[in-house]
Image (cartoon, rainbow, N blue to C red; front, side, top):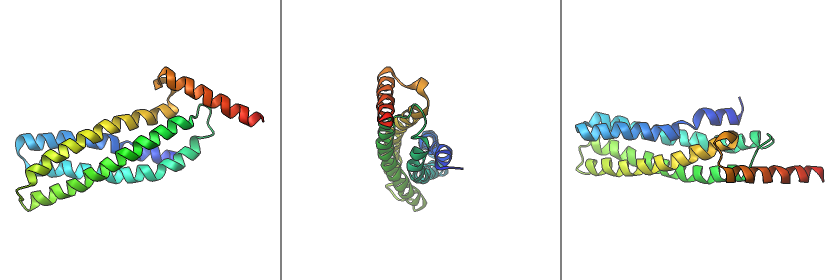
Length: 166
């Protein structure tokens, strides 16, 4: 098992986790159920841990795929930039979720505030997660690339071929 395989295994939960967590949290808020909210917070914490794993395997995954035909440095760079932003948001989401759990356990008056703050952070994480997932998919799935990305990829391949011929 190489880094590309590991990256493919772990990279889905930082994207799907916030979606699941938000749905669970919305249920917890609607039903005013603290254990359901804590379950959502736990999902967010797990998503942030998986973000660490995903980020740590990304560079190795790039090394594995960079010699495959159709590889685009620009697509990988865009994916890396978006992934770094998502990771920061997920680290924040996980950290605030820890405070959410603690505030629920202690019946702190700010517990409701944490619930709504976490909803906002989760929505931002979901937005960036969709961008990261799409940009990651475009690296190897040429069928989902738009026309401008495909033309850039063709130019990248032509440049690589010309450099190899020299």
